[in-house]
Structures are given as structure tokens and as C-alpha cells.
Length: 373
Ligand SMILES: *Cc1c(COP(=O)(O)O)cnc(C)c1O
Image (cartoon, rainbow, N blue to C red; front, side, top):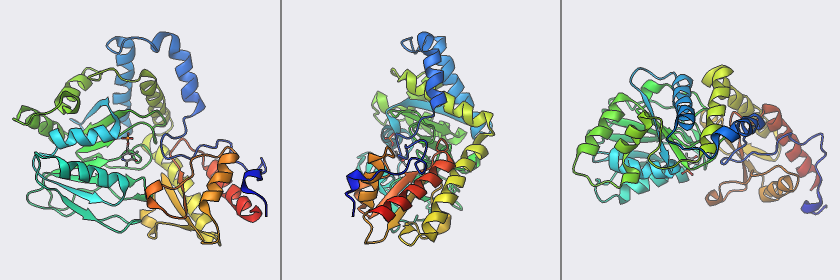
């Protein structure tokens, strides 16, 4: 038996690009080249002037095209990433009471933020076993339904649909789903995300696609007596976004990389193109695991298996953490499972930037490792 550290995967088996992390995720070379080309006139310039504001406009218009947004929908953005947006939502999107589908680390965090907010009623929290998703049900006193399009910690995706009979807003955490899964904008009021996953940029920014009903809620809540810190004030974010700005200074490189990725998606066929790349990769990964004597898709229901973040369980006599270690020593990084899930598992991101052939090469590399351990 060879020592794991000494194993050298044959180079003809290795993926060409070794980045399979679920965020920050693979950034394409062309995005870096575009940033370098623009750097002398873009980086290090004021975010209140046309050069940067035009880039923000490109992002907002690009997302409008990518999601084929109906009339009246608007793209808001601000600093702080998705985690910050959850707190903002407790001030300016939830009026009194929310309902949360909680089925993993990320979806549970927004539920926790709403539970702890002293100005809100205790939310309804619907849970399901890990590796599955629960279903929302309309409640008379719920004014916001919190869904998660893709639970990144477990690799479970769910279709985005308004709960039958619901009158409240539907707010979707799409941090890892946006750009990699298909979605119908008439089924949500808020579709929020951060750019370090399918959009192949860096973290620290939040973006929220808002329906007219969501905009109205923000305006109503901002006019109410609820005290709100300026950083979490979505009316301030709305007013700044309409001017293609953020309330405080954003990371300019992040915006540029994000704009390049949106343009790449739109120029190649839009969301169907981008989601198609992820679904092709997912087909390769799950077919391999189903046929493998030592690997199994963690999510039992094929319809709930994520196209953007795949979770693969390993047989007891194969230590997934050793596979992840060997992969890392060979330049194939971040296949480790979500730490708190505590399973003998690998987690593999298949965002649109990841080439499907590289997912196939990753599967071949894992076969080789298991055969040579
Ligand atoms: C990554 C992720 C988050 C956290 O995003 P941050 O920008 O780091 O706050 C939240 N929700 C989901 C579904 C995620 O995948």
C-alpha cells in the first residue's frame, strides 16, 4: 500500500483545471485577462464616476437579460454578501413573520437570524432530513416565505414555486443556484445571491433581483417606525442601486469579474447555456457514482440531486478524506465535504465555469486513487 502523500495521479487523467470548490469557485482565465486589460483605467478609480458605474449598470442589465425579468423587476446590490442580506431582510423584507424551509447549514442560518430578531414574531421553520428538502405551505399570518434554491452544504436543489395560496413574498437564497439552475422569475419576489459561486467572482457583495411587490415591501418597511442600521437598510440600497452605485465602497475587481461572467453567459445562450453546462456535469458525476462499487450519490431522490454542487458518499472501507488529500496534493482542490455534515463524502462544485470534461477527469482520477491506495 502506497502512502497517500506519495501518490502521483497520471497527468493524462487529471482535470485540466483543478478547482472544484463550492465558493470561492473557479474563475475563468478570460475573466482575469479582461480585468488585466481594463486595469489601468478601471482599478483604482472612483466608484462614484462613470467608469465603475457603467460596469455596475452592465451587471444590472446583464442580470435582467439572463433571468429574462418581467417589467418592474429591479436588481439591487450592496456590500456584505448573502449573510449580510439575511440581516437586511430581517429589517426590511419580513414585516412580522416568516416561514423558512430549513434543510442544511445555509437555510438554517436565515431561519436563525429571523428567530433571533427581537422585532419579529417567531418564524415557522419547516425542516426535513439532511439530503432532502421540505415543502412550503401557505399560512395566513406569514408575510415572507424563505426558500433556498440550492442547499450548498448538502447538495440538494429544489424547484422554485410560489406555495399554493400564499400571499406573502417569496424570497429565495440562490447564492449557489443563481446562474447555474433554471428559474422562472414570476415564481419569486426576491432572488438573492453573492458572486463567488456560479458567477465566478469574489465574495463580499450581495445582489437581489426584486419584484415590484418586494420593492413595495422595502418602501413600506423603510417608512415604518422600525429602527434599521444604515448598512441593513434596503431602501438606501435601492436608491443607490438605481444610480448604479453601492452605499459604501465596493471591491471593483469583484464587480468586473462578475460582469465578465454574466456577459459570457448571455453571449453564449443565456441561462439555458449556463445551466446546461452544470446539468451536463451533474449527469457525468451522478452516473459515475451510481455505477461505482464504492461511491453513491448522497441525495437519494434523483430529482433533488443538485446540478451545481454534487455530494458523493463513499463506502466504509474507502476514506473520502484521504481521497481529498491525494487530490489536493495533485492540484485538485476543495473537494472536501461540508465540515459540519460529518460524512464520509466528497463535495464537488459543478458551476457553469467548470468544464464537464474536467468532471469526467475528476471521476477517473478518483477511480485511479482508490485503485492505488
Ligand atoms: C455560500 C452561501 C451562502 C453564504 O454566502 P456569503 O456570501 O459567504 O455570505 C449563503 N447561502 C448559500 C445557499 C450559499 O451557498
